[in-house]
Amino acid sequence: MRSPFLVAFTTALLAGCSSGPDFERPAKPTSTSYTPEALAPRTSSAGNGPGAEAQSFVPTMDIPGEWWTLFHSPLLDTLVREALKANPDIDAAQAALRQARENFYAQQGSLFPTITGNGQGTQQLASPAAQGQTGTGVIYGVTTASLNVSYSPDVFGGVRRQVESKEALAEVQRFQLEATYLSLSSNVVVSAINLASLQAQINATQDIIRILENSLGVVRRQFDLGGASRADVLAQEATLTQTRATLPPLQKQLAQERNQLMRLVGRSPDQDRGESFDLAKLKLPQDLPVSLPSQLVEQRPDVRAAEAQLQSASADIGVAVANQMPQFTITGALGFTSGGLGSLLVPGAGVWSIGLGIAQTIIDGARLDHQRKAAIAAYERAAAQYKGTVLSAFQDVANALRALQADADSLRAQVEAEQTAAASLRLSEQQYQLGGVSYLILLNAQQTYQTALINRLKAQAARYADTAALFQALGGGWWNRTDVDPKSMGKPGYFALPPVQDIKVLPRAAR
Image 1 (cartoon, one colour):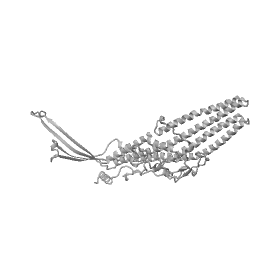
Image 2: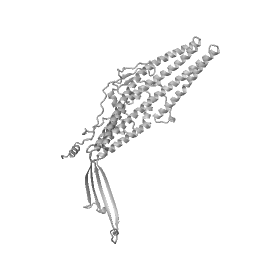
Image 3: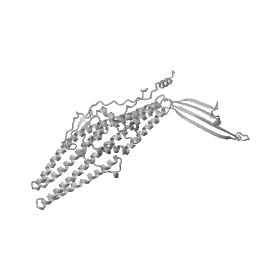
Image 4: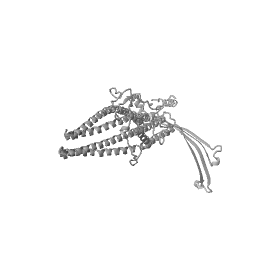
């Protein structure tokens, strides 16, 4: 027992410790804001139109599990639910989670002995000629039955580290499934908003075309009466033609956006049922959550997946360290052997064996040591990726907050510009018909109104889209959903997760 090896072996065996470092969750960020300056508690208001309401940032507000219902669109709710059940990306993520969990369960089996049953019976004719003799051959049989036991004690915790690594990889897939769920629901919401915006732009362009057609009629009458030149007519025709040319690209974008929405909800383009959205019928959420950075790292699925990946890399270091230690194996067998089934259980037919094996790598060209160093480098890489994921999460929230503030100011300015342009166009039309202004003034008024109208629609849609982006950046409220049976986690048809549990950490190991 004075041997250093025996002392180390006995200590490890009694303590049941695991090789390598124990995983410690990264420290939560201490910052309390996403912007250098204090965030304004409310955005500006753009009036009384759709999407013009002021929005308030509420730090203490939790995120609903089905946050998209805050837009108060039953059709949107239906499409999101359809997407979560029919989208193949969800099915793929579910299968990946099931695979990771089965690998984890399979690895757990390495902690237990392996018992195999064996049975064999032979009947053989032995010829005396093989011994240089003559005579009749002898027929005899041999029957054996045994149970064999093999067990490799996890003295240095390498198997437990492997189990920990597989469990962490299952957690990675768990949060990647949740990230897929969040991304899919957000994409459906944004796609619906884009459809409403494009349809509104098409309707507005068609209205502008009608205005230009009426103006063209007026210019032609003025030309017939000698009050306008041929150049004025051609200029108005050119403006009308250019405006008509803007319709096909919008219609193309609308068709492509519809195809995208069909893909999200798990349909082919020919299965489009004609669902349509109207910006005026979507309610803009007026109270918006702003989670603290320390909460964000708990809420974001991609951050939690990166943390689980970090734990897996940490456990792999322990596996590499344990591989450098002596490997122990206990084997045993218990059985019977006889000349036939009838005499298998008679006294004296029993056989047994037991053995203890130990193996220690002495020279391997430093292979195991380099594997350990590679595992350490993989951990350092995972740590850097985790930090990058956290920074990206903060950036997403900061971008969304900035965008919401700018969107409100932009919409207010665009509404004012549209109102001014519309008033200017009406006045120019009246004055031109009376001969009070030149045709160039009327043409400029038409072009200004057209631009202002389209910009106002785009600014209006941006407020809805960036609101959805904020909910996505904050994690989507998946921890508050009640639409999932925990027993169905990872099974076919499962598309969400229950609240996350604390990550398990094995007892502190000898360094």
